[in-house]
Image (cartoon, rainbow, N blue to C red; front, side):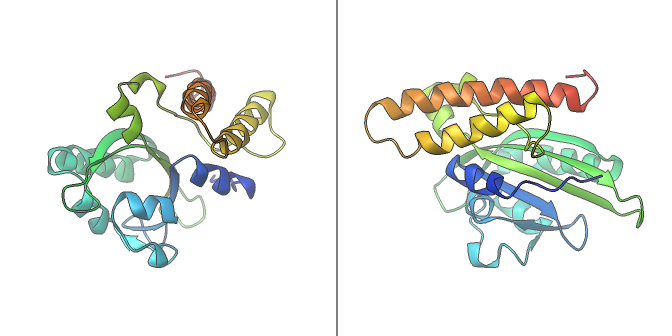
Length: 196
């Protein structure tokens, strides 16, 4: 069953170059936020109305498109976790690196497959050589376990760090992203019953 995301999480995600997505009328229709729309060069004003999957496929780098189509197709058909790093081309001569993470589950009442997840812009990490500092996490429930509360606080800390001026900010961002990555791995392991 899909869980509601606490109200403060979307703002923290946007400050962290993280977008959100969820299926709309079908598994071929996606409602995204402005950050996610920008990663694909889609009109942010229409993001809440949603876009067909084909609109996202067009913006995926040709070198990653076939693999993406295969993986998303298997996730839509069978359900489960979807994790993939790929490139998008939101505008001519622009390439963004994206880490996508989500989950597809069948609705117990309607039998329809539904999905929800996040898209993390990791372009800076790819360009500055700090690939190991990628953030990977899942949105925790409010008032959950100590681990989930730690992830929430880390997201809020990253949002505050983005407001810091000066040369210290990049170092602090990398440090908090490393923490988010570690928390995300542990949360993901717990969500899958201990399997990576």
